[in-house]
Image (tube, rainbow, N blue to C red):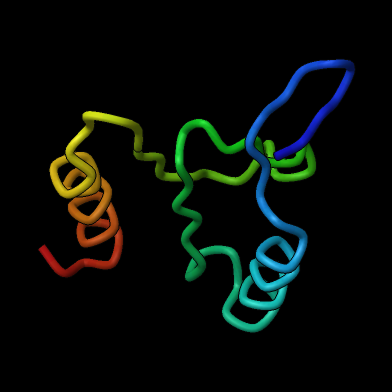
Amino acid sequence: MLIKRDAEANAARDNVLFELGLFMGALGRERTYVVNEKSVRLPTDLAGIATVSFQRGEGINIVANIGPVVTKLQLEMGLL
């Protein structure tokens, strides 16, 4: 949870962002995929990075919502 200017928002943890940087450095941006929940605020430094988002919440079927994400990743990887 991040509180900025009296507004609360979900935010990615620092260690997750650090690991993203490690993977991008080792594998390259073209082979690194960012999947995030829509409600999670990403730092503005990642504004130019393409992400694939899904929605999670009460009463939402996570399996059904993550299906399109998996399909996009499979297409990008040439698996479909």
